[in-house]
Image (cartoon, rainbow, N blue to C red; front, top):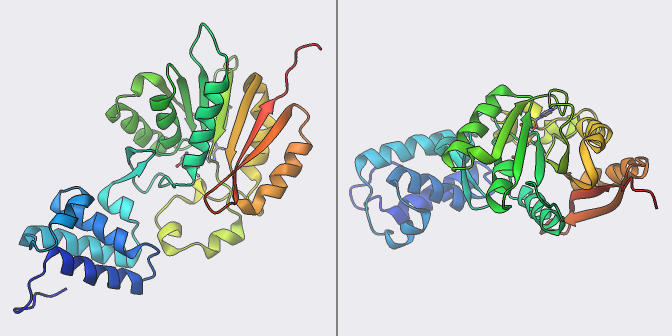
Length: 300
Ligand SMILES: C[S@@+](CC[C@H](N)C(=O)[O-])C[C@H]1O[C@@H](n2cnc3c(N)ncnc32)[C@H](O)[C@@H]1O
């Protein structure tokens, strides 16, 4: 990306060159990566690049852009370079201590909102737990979109909880979300129960982890992703511990990988206190979210 005397480095030329470079480096979204980084360097919205193709960014902007392009080429995720990721139309701060929220997880948020709307909770706020909150993406999105919801956001990583707390404060939702440092429900008050428990837990197997890209393996926390040899360690513990924390008729909603959908179904079949199993599919038609109900304990 050296300056040629004849042709100026316009926005369009920078985008085209960088897209080609990222493509060579194996990015799955080279043009998008280039646009987000250039918009960040110019301190403008991505859409504004389209009306500025002929403009030549300042030397300072080009230096900042060049440095981010270099680091992206080495594998650093775009979200860590700009410091945030959009999720469910909100902007979440991220760093190397949290998983970068993925678009697939929005299916879980939609399912939780639908379940909350269908519930007839009266005279008190609806209570929802987000187990393994990371950046707080799920808990904070639910607090934003479900009226009068009280969220409990749990994580075993203190560094993640700091980021999640910052996100809740900066998105104006700190009053609706309580953050708890805990291994699943261990440090959550014994009497506390929930109408909905949702979780995007670690579910990658040890062998799948070795196949992930450098951008994931070297830049995102391993403990946010890996869950034993079959990817089921945390999900198994969730199915053991979550039902006693659910109100009768409450829902347990877990993001899964399509690869473990059958194992999850077998686990559900062996769990007597849960019924009404539903799978939510992603845009590719794969089973992405498992949603179950705590069986009613009312006498017939
Ligand atoms: C896949 S990340 C999900 C982060 C965020 N909820 C999202 O969807 O972007 C899993 C999170 O669970 C946390 N975690 C893993 N095991 C846990 C456990 N036993 N108890 C509490 N949190 C756990 C990790 O620290 C990580 O933040």
